[in-house]
Length: 381
Image: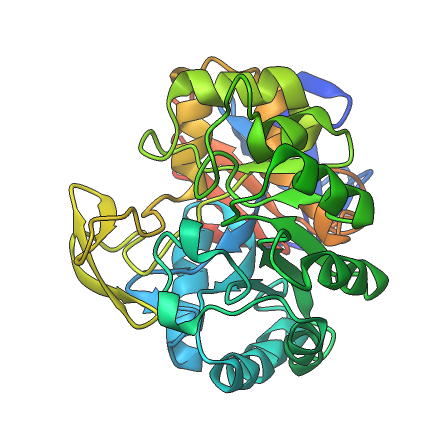
């Protein structure tokens, strides 16, 4: 790439709205406010240019697991998601032995320090056996603050989020501990009541791990955690928009009550994302992926997803009928803000990293740029 390049003619989604026939100027690895008169231009007429996607809950892809793979495997998984527009990826773990998770956190912290991933998310082992989903029940434990602190310390400053069943013994104290250390406390895989959820939010929880999934359903006499999470302005709700985890009406309900500033699209992807059907593992559990849906071999529970965020974007635009500006908030700006990296990524503004996605008129990937380098080169006339 030249020192300065102008991406011209596209619909550009900025924090202030959509700019028709817009221009994005890339200077080195960053977005610039101006370009030299002789800077080369790429004509993207008929396309969209949006910020690179930020996936804050992702277990792997391209046949590789972030929980158990080698460094090479992890980088393969990250690259797979970059090809689908996720220029920023947080590596999520599933439940495992405490010592194993601590060792893995130490390994992945190095990748985070190098900028290959945006940090580490511990989904388990501090979750409810009643709502375990695709987690090994024999490895679950109560969220004792000392154990939570052990994993946070093992991540060497790269822990970004911990999912907790906050109604379990130690849950509220662990939420306070995480908040004090600048780590997101996420309520998920929980059997909490409405009142217990409110208590956890008041203690400092700020995220709902894949809202609706792995928690009690919304009830008219016992509203449970969903009502508390949707109504509170302090909570951002994760949504897996793959057509399997959520009915379109449930997604619309979340957007209506939480609003676009409080939704984060995630993949919750496992190894098969971007790879195909077959036999896989999620932690110690066997998973079969058939027709793109991952389920445990024993019991048949949904085991993460094979989603990539470009598919979530397209579905939101073409099936759910969401405004493109709202989708960009949910898929880029909001997760970047939650992760504390919105000074660098999440929107197309001068001074930020040149992380962007080019979409065609059908909302399919036409190009992906990360830090000024094309990961997917646009094929335009």
